[in-house]
Image (cartoon, rainbow, N blue to C red; front, side, top):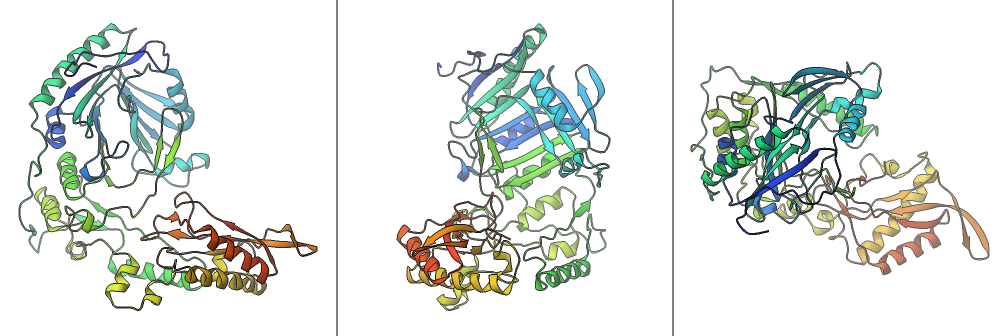
Amino acid sequence: MIPGDERPRASRAQHLGPHRRVEWRRVEGAPDPERLHAALALDPRASFWLDSSDAGAVTATDGRISIMGDASGPLAEVLRYDVTTARWDVRTAAGRHTVRAAFHDHLRSLLASCPVAVPEDLPVDFALGWVGALGYQLKDERMHPPPHRSTHPDAALILADRAVVLDHASATVLLLALVDDALPHTASAAAEWFTRTSATIKATPPATAEPPEPPPPGLVRAPEDTPPRFHLDQDEASYIASIERCLQHIRAGDSYEICLTNTATGAPLADPAAAYRALRRTSPVPYGALLRFDDLAILSASPERFLRVTGDGTVQTRPIKGTVRRVAEHPRITKPFSDEAWADLNRLGHQVDAAVRARAPLRPVAPDRAGGAELGLPEVIVARQPFPGPGLGIRIIGEVTERNLDILRRADAIARSELTAAGLDAEIWQCPVVLLADVRSVGVQGDGRTYGHPIVLRPVSSEDAMTADWTRVPYEVLAQISNRITNEVEEVNRVVLDVTSKPPGTIEWE
């Protein structure tokens, strides 16, 4: 490629489609994303901004690109799906129509019917296609009738035929357009869009250290008699009562972890784009998003990438939940809900209930061990493994009996003592020892055969238990643990190691 050459490209295709292909241009420069998003004037009825706002998270594959687009092109489509009726509402340049089909069936048909020729030299994985949001209610599609009904579309998708891709790693912008050779006007429309959008990008100032619209200083408080704009589904008393009910179930051994949620409901955002700009400045993340579908706007600030599927079909999963950098590593974030953040929201006309605001300055929670050390607790207490919650029963796959508990206690004591002797207590966050009580296999000990149970070792390293990676315990330590358990716990004839991260696995085997 010749530097500065902005002619449309269409290289040899990876996939041979009947008529459709991707053309692209490169524009040198690093325009400020917020200013560029405003300058592009995307269609508010159907648009998207897949955003990487955290400069510290940019790598060759993570947090590298931000993508902006809408449904204003001649080949664009906007789809909304309702699980209860199995109905698609489809909007194209030609008008609206309805399709009756199950979600996965119709989506599979759409993907198969419109193959696209993708240039081999396209420097990013994104090559247009479907962009949108899928709701939890899609899981109800196999249930008749669906037990839940959402007030929002269960799926909202845009067939993006144009997109602006900001490559933060190379400080360039890529323009992508879908062209259908059977429809000559799509090529001329793409060429005109390339020219217009290139001029917009070049006229947009570059990113600076300071946000383009600095929030006003201090917290803007609403008058005492101002009605709250946001209301919680559960008030303080109800939420505390819910917590107590959960604790009762945990004490009874019904569960060891229960996640409670509360929903804040308020008036619609007058300007979702302005609200998202405030959000991305106060909470920079590698995977943010602003999606707009008529009366539905979705704002997201997430450090998580749940799945990545590459062009060759490889599926990658990364740890989710609790992955935000600590404040010491990320000086721009002083607290997730800062005074400045509330000021921004209030400036947009959204006063928050005083009861919510009183609990708003949530700060990053330090790891348990760091907090214990700060309190001056002894190392033997600080380094102690958390759980087992309601008892060793959550580490038994099978019936929880006195016999099985005794087997597990003896094996657990051996593993704990050997890990401590090896000086690994500070490295291993937790090492559940799991008894597969429902499993027996043939073993050999001495001159005879045994028919014993397996024991699973699950050493993991973690900061907050939301994500975890299996700990690389030295082989000699594992060998010592295995030898002792199989020699000293006669009911066990195998010791195995769990080398699964969380996700996809959990820490415990409950």
